[in-house]
Length: 212
Length: 253
Image (cartoon, rainbow over all chains, first blue to last red; front, side, top):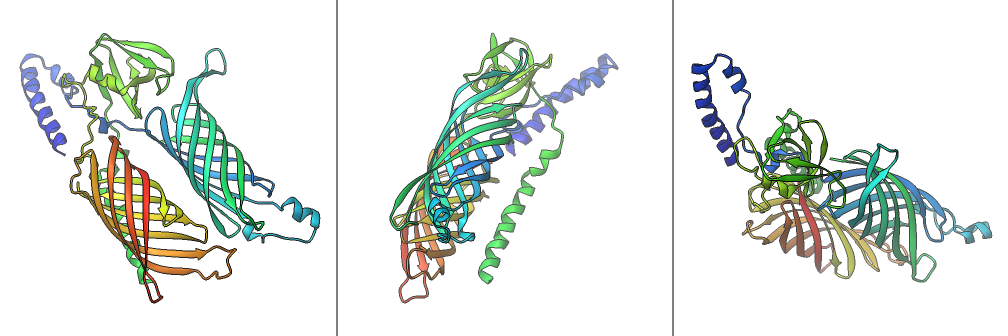
């Protein structure tokens, strides 16, 4: 607020003598002179685009429960040119295990219990920035990234603490619109088959995102 | 039911507040931010990162329009309409219409985040269970922040989630490492694991007392360390106490 008042004050100070002189010298000058506005520029006046929101879809291999379609949303905050912070939420549905299919009648889980959702908070690191040439005159900015983080998975009426590792490739069609080709591994341990079992659940996905 | 009404009213207050803080300015057309290059040259990159190629060099005396920023980079347009990215630090090598470099300070200013929202995410240990917490706060004075938090815990014997509303106070907001005290209240839901025999869900009121610190990493980005003591008012004979330790990040926007 103080700086705004200062700015107005400075602008008023700067403009006053200009206008007065101009009127004496040349009748055309006030019109030109009034366009010249003196003002301090500070960072808060500049639009920042550090947030990124996106949607993605792909295939999620739920260990023992088949390969399944997955869709999700993501929100990222770019901290520096190297690091970003990412929150994602995805949903999928588990198929029957091989055992359930072969035995015919056995059902481990109800339909509701097969619903699978997860969220994850990760720290990401961008590497190998560069340009990809799509034609002689068209180049898009690109970079790879790796992520590591954690969150929760809701599956079979339980919540599982989940750790994740990921990597991906990003292509920027414009400064604010990007395509993401990514791979994630969600790791958690469950006891659905009677004893603790560590699982790796791989996800391959394609996403679109916009910066704001 | 009255338990729910209070938090929702406060949330409404929380979300209506920024209307007074200049959010409406977003829709008004701003004048272009024009600066003049005041050093021998400034490199222009194709993207907001030091690894992208330099395709142009701005000359001394050239005027450029600042378009937007991303992390430590600023997108500029030249008088001829070429667009590219320059490092934020190079703003010190330019002058605005007052003849001074524009104000791109690296210093954290505690007054600059007043009237701003802060979004946070944290991981922690909730009495042995892994916890994940999301928070949304609104800083209404230099010292005081009102904050809504939602945390989920995944333990070996039970899962739980805590939704709460609290107030934090930072006695020294201008410090780089700025401690805070917090008080809050909310609701905890405890669901014993489905594999256990006793699967009765419980919902209790919880009081929270926190002690922690913000550590600022950049102008708008903070590391946050937190210890919270949860005091569960149970329907049983004794009340429960749970200690939670968290580390997370907060960003102001």
